Length: 316
Image (cartoon, rainbow, N blue to C red; front, side, top):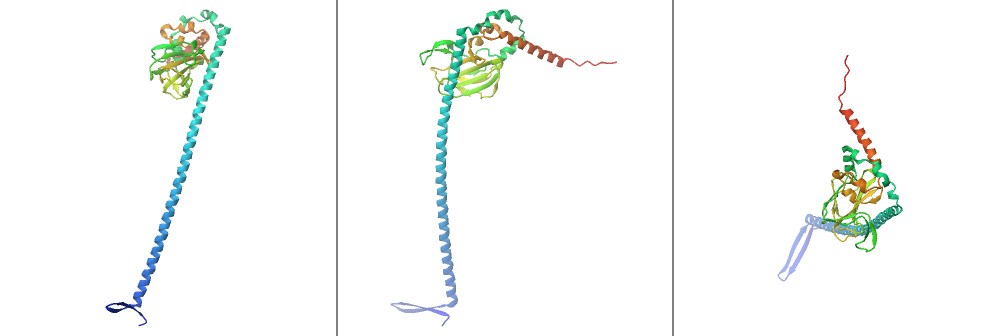
């Protein structure tokens, strides 16, 4: 009887007695212990999962806050970049205006006529050979950079269409539809590409050989990047209406030694009227340039002839 457990169950119908052996009691205790351990393990695992979810939520919240901070920093930097670009555009326009005023002072003092007095006696255009002519037309801006409808503004003093005051216009305005292609008038390297919504608007500048440069303003789309080399006739941009502009057009400038000169003489210059630019733009020492090119081309032709000549063998 010591190894048995007696269980009595009473009801209205009487009492019933059940006996449980010692071995069965041990099994029940083991099962109860296992259930207790399993329950405890389940509680611990659930708590672990809840902690992991909470930690993940905190990480997500931290990442979201960090992302919002980064977006705010990016927006602030974009605003600063826009402000700096506007300031750069204003400073660039001021530099160009100062340069043009220097040109006006030179014209007023007659300094631009010092060289032109005896140009005809110095330069004989008829003696310039075809190789030199071809080199000049390839390296120096010549011809129109685009097909335009009409010239809306000339080079020189004019009444500004927006501000209403008289200013020196440093180039020519060529009216054309938005998106009209613009081509490089000579070989060169793109010195600067500047997007802007004020002043010259989207602007591009190409540096050519022998001290020449060209500038293109109020552009719609750039087709080249700063530092890239371009060939004469290569697509560089399209006509737009950006900046201080009242209608789609190209503002086109030609510079020599960083000073704006009349682009019209260069736009009208080609192989059929080769002497045109020399008579129209007398502030440039054309005779010095032609003399240098003649020597350079002559040396190149001489070197090529030496390379092409067959070697002579001496026999006994």
